Amino acid sequence: MIAFVKRLDEAGAALDRHDPETALTLLQSLEDGGRTLDQADAARCRRLVQRMATIAEAQRQGIKAAIDGVTAARRAAASLQTYDNSGRRQIETTAFPKARRF
Image (cartoon, rainbow, N blue to C red; front, side, top):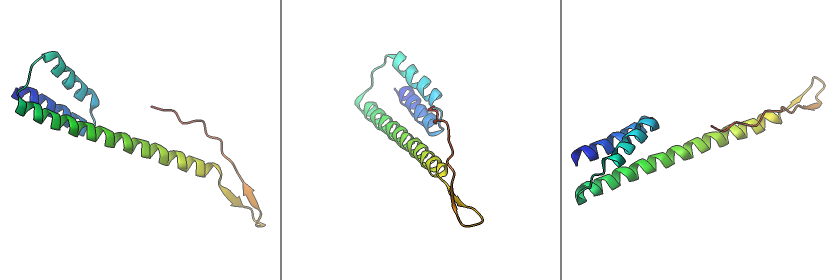
């Protein structure tokens, strides 16, 4: 069972390195193994999986915050106001294409 826990640990390390493809491959290889765990290994695996889930959620929130920040900056830039030499306000709007989602 040590190999099972080690592979789960490696999947967590892959997520830490922002390498979800490797993590997914490692986790799928665990599913294909069809092994059972004793209680101690199962508890350790639960902690590792919870840690991976927490990291994945934090990454999701960070990406959402970055997208929201870029969206706000684009909105602000779209309605910039400037003044000409005589002090009159000129409003320039900029049309941006809708942001693509990844």
